[in-house]
Amino acid sequence: MLGTMTVQRMDNVAIVVEDLDAAVAFFAALGLELEGRAQVEGPWVDRIVGLDGVRSEIAMMRTPDGHSKVELTKYHAPAALAAGPQNPPPNTLGLHRVMFAVDDIDGTVARLRTHGAELLGEVTQFESIFRLCYLRGPAGVIVALAERTA
Image (cartoon, rainbow, N blue to C red):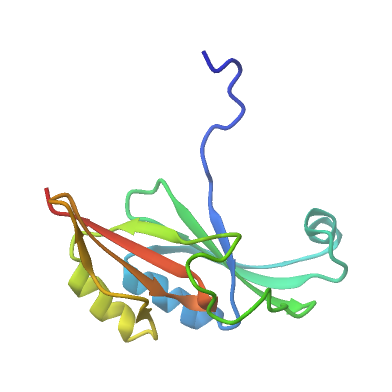
């Protein structure tokens, strides 16, 4: 037995981006729905994130099934900082990737390419179960796609 459960669900994954409109367009092309946008600032935000003078804009993107969300954040103040090398490889420590199940991997890759996405490798078949690929998305985040084939 696991004992007392403390987590009810994973609510969202946050990605800090330079161009919020472009990131929203990318994830909309992937199939996520814009749930809402908001300006976020004030002492309560400063206390949560541990920064002073936060002024940011967020866009909440929801998967079509409503179970998962991606929060896109544009920091106006203080300015966002680069965490390391631009476009780190998949074996870099830290957040590795975000994976989405899709129904048409080739069509999805084609749509995302019009929003600047680039394949890291190629679309490959895993046994007879999935077609998989990794793309570079907004802010250098790796977005993985999986299409069930069996």
